[in-house]
Image (tube, rainbow, N blue to C red):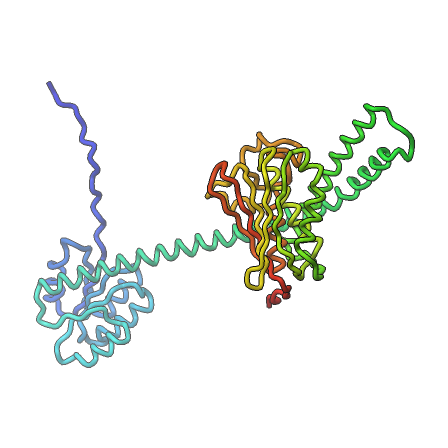
Length: 408
């Protein structure tokens, strides 16, 4: 039975032979060198420097092997001319002992890679040329990689500039859209509030419920618009701070009191042990930090759980920690949670109510916290032991506010 199996082993493709140029005014030497190298390389010969220069007008050689003493032009002078056109070509000089001083100068000037003294041994010149060809191939490969890298860098630079342009357009669109939305949303909210006040007449039960739902929805829309504008100001370093001195514990207590009804609804408790510390900062901006800290902890904690709010002096800073007993944060997401619009957990599981378990939101709360704290020359980070192990958001603020250095 005939064996029709096919050998699928990879076949080594032979590497193309490199071109080398041998220059000598003695025909016997040319013939000898050509016979020495013809099995490994494509050997071109020239009987004079002028003939060699004509060949160099047509192609680049990996290696030039030239005699030093030739009529009209020395080997070193030939190499100087060759180097101007082909700087990567490797140059090997054949010389006698009487030319050593000139040879040392040529080597120092970079015109000669190696020299071989006459009479040479076959083993010596073969090994010298072989190493020269390897050096040429490595150099050409490295420069080709460098050229490719320059092209890639140029492409990346163009892409980066395009991304910056698109980011500016996106920011401009968000600024215009937010400002344009804020005005009609405020008008709608104001009119709904007027209806609910009864100033223009009483409403029936169903009517009042519909207006209340509309008012709540409009309020959430305004909150979202304000969050977006705050983030845009932070990104543009345009968050203006009104610096005053105030008690950080009193501020935290005021903000916590604003959550009283929502905390009662969720059967949650905010246990505060903040120290009485007077700091310098923007009171309204830092109130927003506390609002987002508590809102975030409520959202990711189940009903009936306790939220801890601690604060203490640490060197010249006040260190604030908001700790919950909620769903926790995977290690790989501890930094991601501060990114714009990032939300923990499955988005499909989130609810529309902002204060319910896994309640909805803009995904900008922690972004605003970090941006506002950094504008105060502070820092923010998150810690968690993992899923269902709760989380801690750390905020460190300097007690005394200093203006950041102006970038030149």
